[in-house]
Structure formats: structure tokens, C-alpha cells
Image 1 (spheres, helix red, strand yellow):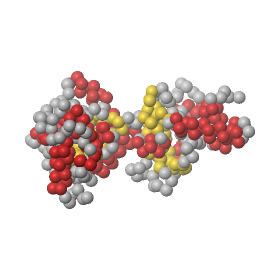
Image 2 (cartoon, helix red, strand yellow):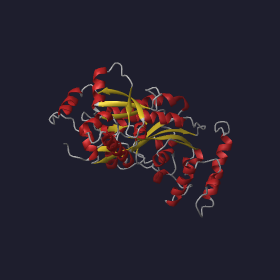
Image 3 (tube, helix red, strand yellow):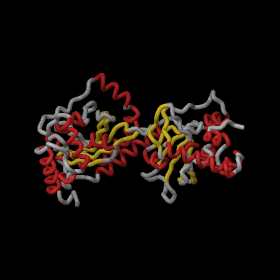
Length: 392
């Protein structure tokens, strides 16, 4: 069904779904009862709001958090806001003619930045487009903001799909924003008031969120950047994975695409992950190749994974880290740049696959670790480390 060609039908379907839930809410809403008007996750959010004691006809305060709380939020959200600034400026120009505006929140739904044509004379716009306002589900019910934060995927929410009648004037597209550590740090929202349905904005907000994530990742301290994609794809598009490495080969950060390609979980404390845990080749070669190629032209190379798959990659050095990498390679702890304490978790299945592959190579080499390491393209130290055996 074309949503843009049948706006009256769409609003009628939403209203029908609301009547099913709000007028007869003795039990859970069956999926078939929502019709095609709302998605299951919208109905689930409505159910959560009802369980919290909220009622769709009650007034919405759009309350701001305390000044002390806001200072803590602003400090914690500083990297997110800084990374988002250039993206939000461009985004505001893109949506200016349709009178939508952009809202950036933290992971709790607190507004940390606003960009775009906000009509401050319209209380409906001014109420939500203020830094410090709590736009979480518990505060203002079902919204694209609360939906994106709970579903962790891009969403589109139109008029009556919002829980409260008072928020039924809004149409919103939202997408979560993930930090370099892999955890959701906030969300990006595009909102219009009494607007026609524009589900295409879900694509725009998703692309903008990805730009914020990449900008944030590349702004953090690192020694090497790897741009990843599957063979046959041209590097440089929205599907590229990005990871950053420290001079000792530890993975410092990754965008969501890279995490999906490499099966990386969000960072956890005290569980460092090294490039050799992911790539079935000598990690030092990535730095050597980037140093030889310089910054002007970055060739594509294939990288084998321990899973048996292969990725294509481009590698380039951060301009100020060549000396630090040399120091790390030579074992000089005085000049070594330390990795952050938060590092991603490698899935147990992938770890087991790596170990089995190394054991098989050692067995095939009849116990000759040096020969097995050469066959795998890794160092002897990595073989010993993976097998948990002391060096001979």
C-alpha cells in the first residue's frame, strides 16, 4: 500500500487500531487487531504506556530535567553533540523547505541539541525543541524518539501512532546513534507538525545517524583506520564498516556496519580485543601497507577472517601516530599509546573457530609452530597466545 497516496485511509487505520486498544484493553492486543494501520512495535509501546498508568487523553507537560541533571547529561553527551554538529547543520538545510526540524537526544531521551526551522511562536514546536526536555516514553508516551531507543532501528511514526492525543499533531522519523564502543548513545529525530506522511524521511535520518557515528569514531584517538566491505562492493558507500586500531593492534572502536561484518559485540571492560583475534593474517602488515601507500591513494586489499570469510579493506594511518606505532612494534612501553579500557567482546563461537583453525594448522605442520604460523600468515607469538601454550 502506498502510504503517500492514501493519507485518509492511513489515518483511519491508525484510529481503528487505537479504538481496539484504548476502548477494550482488558487483555493484550492481538497482532491482527491492529490491521495494517500500525506496526506491532507501536502497539507494544501503547501497551507499555498503559501499563505505566498513562492515559491517552491526559495532558502532556513536556517537562525539562533539573539544571544539575542537565549539566551531567551535557558533559556525558559532549562527544555525541560535537560529532553531530556538522551533520545537523547540513540536515537542517535539507529539511528546511518541508518545515521539519532535527532533535538529538541522549540514550534516555533527553534533548541535547536542536537544529532546523523551529517556529518558537508555535507552542507545539517550542515544547519539544528545547535542550533539556525529557522526551522519553515514560514522559510523553509513544514517539519516534522512544521507539528508536527501544527498537534500536530506524522508525517512522505518524500522527495518531503517538500514544497521547496531545502528541498526535507530530510526524517523526527517528534512528538510534551508536558510539564507537557499540552501545546506543542517543537518537536523531526529524519532526514535523500537522505534516503529511513522509516515510522517506526514515532513510534520511538513518543515513544522517550513520554519518554521526562515523564522524564520532574518526574523531577519537587512533593509529590506523580500516574501511571494510565485502568483495565486489565499491568502498566509500553507506554500507562500509569502519574500525580504528591502536599502535599495538588493539581495536579501539567500530561503527555498526563493521560490528555486523566482524560479529563484534559492544565493548565491555577488561576484555581487550586484538586485530589478530579477528583477522587471520599478520596485523602488522596493515600498518606497513598504510605507511608505504601514504594518504593520497589507498589501495584495496583482501583480509581473511578466522570464520573463513574474506573482506576487502583499505587502511590508512593517522598522521601523528607513525612514531607511536614504531615504538609499539619495537616493544618500547615508554612511547606506547595505550588502548582505552573499553574494548569489544569477541563472540565465543568465533574464538572457538580461531582456536580450532590454529590447532588444525599446527597438526598439519606436525607440531612445527613456525611452519603453521607461516601457513596462516600470523606470528608465532599469536599461535602460542591463541593456544595458551608457553613459547618454546
